[in-house]
Image (cartoon, rainbow, N blue to C red; front, top):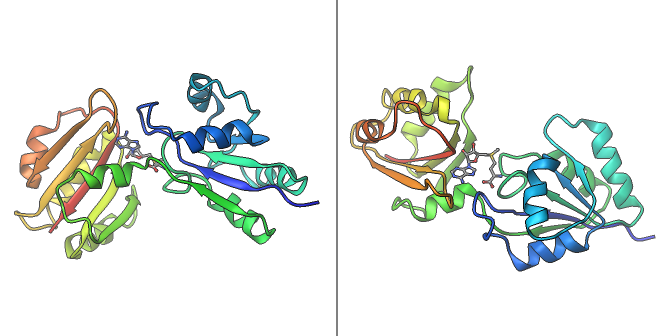
Length: 222
Ligand code: SAM
């Protein structure tokens, strides 16, 4: 029997209308949707009246969950992997499953769509012909090393940051990069409170609230 296919399906990063026709068609037609959080993805799926069975698959799922999904694929069933938002595999769970599927000879089919990194970059006004994507910065060890790497980069650097670490990270970055480095912080992309803060680090820090809320992408060009 032929193995099933594994679809890596991008979903909206906030605005539910940013969902492609193809993504909808695939999620309707596969046998199983592996979701990071079934309740969270349930909002999108019920909005589009997609009633395909769901299974949770997140960063702490472990080998047993990978084996379970692999068993579906072995039986010839098609599986779609989605994450809470954006493109699975981009600072989101997916790698272990994709690796296992590749080793088992399963076809992996990407269904492109939103990703916060590309959405943020395209309207940043910073050079985007080459960029260095760092995902989430380390929280404890390795921060100084990564700040030095950012300060030395000749390309635009882009990374994700949580709201409660945003001001601290920007403050620490200021100790490494030149005073005239161009910084852009994109907030809540595609959502009601979408905003871009642009300027030097001190200017951006002045504009960002003392207690930031929401989701952020940080970009910097030396
Ligand atoms: N896989 C996702 C993608 O393709 O964008 C990224 C997932 S990562 C776990 C989540 C982080 O992405 C958030 O903490 C935030 O830094 C960034 N992010 C996701 N959605 C965002 C949005 N609407 N606006 C700004 N940043 C966002």
